[in-house]
Length: 189
Image 1 (spheres, rainbow, N blue to C red):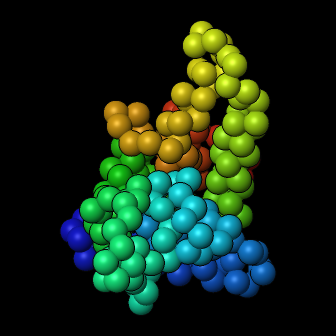
Image 2: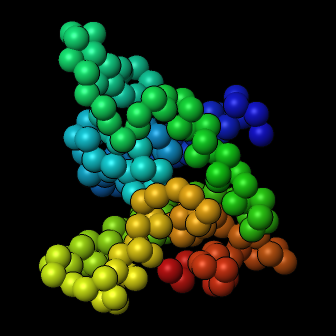
C-alpha cells in the first residue's frame, strides 16, 4: 500500500473508533499517531501504548505544543524526536499492513474487542510497574515480566504483541483472533 492508501486507512480507522467512542460516551481518545483508542486525554504528553507516539497536542489541524515553543526560541526534545506525525502514521500503517499480510487478516474494527485488548495490556503493564520496588536483584522474575511488558512499548526485532492482537485473522470463512500465534474464535478475548 502506498502512502496515500496508508493515510486513508489511518483516517478511516480513526474515524471509526472516534464515532464509537462518541456514540457510547466513552472518555477515551484516539491517538493521532496510530488512530487506535488508547489515550485518556489529548495533549497531555502521554505516550500511546500502541505506537509509542507522545501526544503533545499535534493533530491534523493543530501544531505540536513543542513546535509552538520552538518558534518562541525554546527547544525541548521529545520521544518523537524528528519523526513527523505523518511519518509515524505511515510507519504504523506499514507495520499493520505487514502483520495483516503475515496473519492473512485485517485490522480488527470490533471497537469493543479492541478497547478490551488495549485495556488488558495497559492493566498488565500497570500491575508489573506496581510490583517493582527497585530493590530487586537483576535475576528477579519481575524483570522478565517487565522485559515482556516493555516489548509493548518499544520497537525492534520483536513486534508488539498488542499489534498482533489488533489483527483479525480470516481462516476458512470464519473470523478468528490471533494472540501470540494462537487463534481463538471471534469475541473470546
